[in-house]
Image (tube, rainbow, N blue to C red):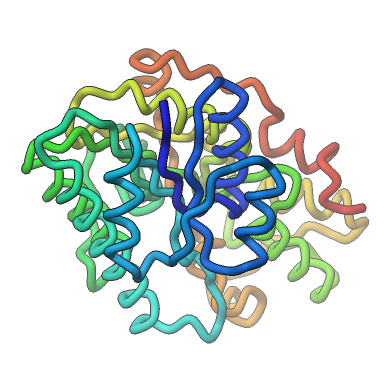
Length: 303
């Protein structure tokens, strides 16, 4: 199968690329820059130059291939990434999904897009059948799922891989390294209150395997949960970081949270346990790489 892959040089996308290639698939990778194109070419991957805003290029990639995996998204969170920018990123993602969906309409070719488990049902265990409780105004990434449902309603064979808040492994530059940096800077590794709020997590290689397995989806609009760890108390994550850095692990009050975590406070108090039972049963997904706390001990995060 020839597969059009966006985000092919990203943290998750590069793992998906290798997973596909290792299982005999040919990949057409979207490359925004000369550097990305050279990297893909060196790995023997076909290259399509363009970016996620170039809808005609996205349509061309989808037209030329037997399936599409859309793993590209601007997920850069920072203190300067305001609500308007997040909304703009989500709107562009929706446009990309609809453009690819239009190209695939009337075919049975698989189309896999990317969302997140954190937006589904905070405060309780989230299932694959759940739809996000947020509005786009509250959580702009909901627009991705709305676009997927729109494309599914047109009969396109689309599936949604919902990634856990932390996708970890070698090369991680997401939430876990950020928490480590905060703990180094503050001299303590902190959690809020009793720290019982839970994150889910998945190793990037296990996430990549799920994208490949998702190509077998035949239910338009199906959701798949990339959660190897279903519920890790944030206190345990903070404790693992504290032990590895040799700094105290402490509880801080909600009043102190913004001063300690800054803009990351919202994620530090996130409570989003996730079930992946249906995903495992339906697609035969069996995570085999280190769980998050094991990866924190052995994965090179503190080298």
